[in-house]
Image (tube, rainbow, N blue to C red; front, side):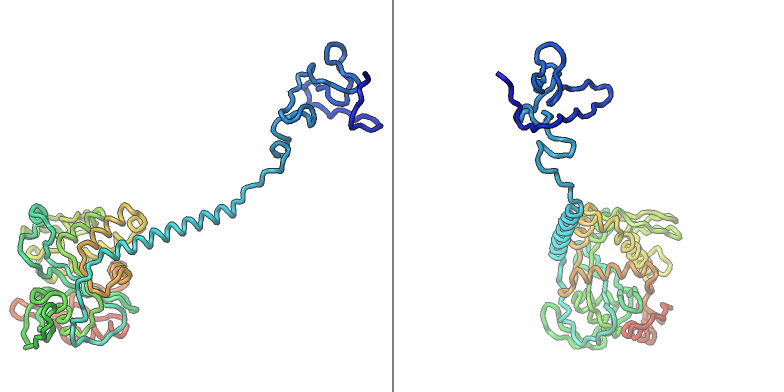
Length: 408
C-alpha cells in the first residue's frame, strides 16, 4: 500500500541542518534513507532505528525527540522560567529584619523596665528649689548587704553591719553647657531642715541641727537625703539612683571587669584593697575595694571621692560600647545585674537611666567637669562647704552656663 505523507505541500524539501564537526549525521525527517539494511527510509520516512535516535516521552517522533525542552530555557516546551526578582526579595528581607529588631527592642524595654525598683517617692520632699536647665541626678552608693551570703560578705570585705548607710554620694548634672559630676563627701557638714517623714508622714521642724551628710540618709532614708542636699545647695534633684555593695560588684563582673590605670599602688586592710601601680583590669571584688578605700589615702574622704568618680566614669565608658550593647550575651547579664539591685525614684524610666549613664560617660570623654563640691575648711571632723562657690556653681548649672567653679 503506498505511503501518504501528511502535512507536506509541494515544493522542495528542506535541507538538513548542519551537524557539528565530528558528529555523525542523523538521518531524519525529509532525508533519503541510509543504503541497505532494515529501517531503510521509504518516501522520506525514517524510523530512527538505524541511527540510534531516542524519542521523548511525550508523543513519539515529532519535535526532534529531545527530553526536557529546547535551548531557550523552557521546560517541556512550556513558558520560560522568570528571572528572580532580587529587589523584591531584598525588600521583603529588610522588612522582616526590621520587624524582628523592633520586636526584640520592645521586649527588651518592657523586660528591663519591669526590673527597676522604684522605691523612692520624691513627692514627699517639701520646699523644693526651682527647676533649672538640664537634669540633676543624685547617685548614691550604699553599704547595703541585702541579699549577700556570709561567704560573699567575707570575700568582699563588707562586714555584717545591719541596715544601710551612704558610702558615696554625687550629683550628676546633664545640661546644654556640658555635664558635671560633683562628689559630696559623706563627712560634709550640713543642716537638717524641716521634712516630712517618709513612713510616718509627720512633719519634723528644722532646728538648725548640723550633722554629717550621710546621717540624713541613716535618719530617714533617700527622701530626707534629697531634701537635705537640696536645702544645703539650692539645686533641685530630678532623679535618684542607688546601688548596694553586692549589685555594684555583680555589674563589674558582668561586663568582664573594668580597666583602670593607677598612678601608685596602695593597700587597705579594711576594704581589702591591694593594688600595684600601672594599668590593670579590676573584677567586682577589686572594684568594690578600690571605691571604698579611705584609710590608705592621704586625703581620706576627698581622695576617695575622686577614686569613685574615676572608676564610675571608666565603668560607664567601657560598658557603653558596641561590643556590649550589640552583644546580647553581654548586654542582658549586665542589665540584669544592675537593674536587680538598683533603687530609683518612682518617676525614673529607662530613658532617664540611659541619660544618666551616657552623662557619666560624657564626663570621661571630656564633655564636662568632674570635681568635689567646693569646701572652705572643716568643723571638727566635718568638711565645711564653700557657700559662695556653691551658689555660683548652682547658678551656672541652672542657667545652662559653662561651669567655671573649681573644687579648691
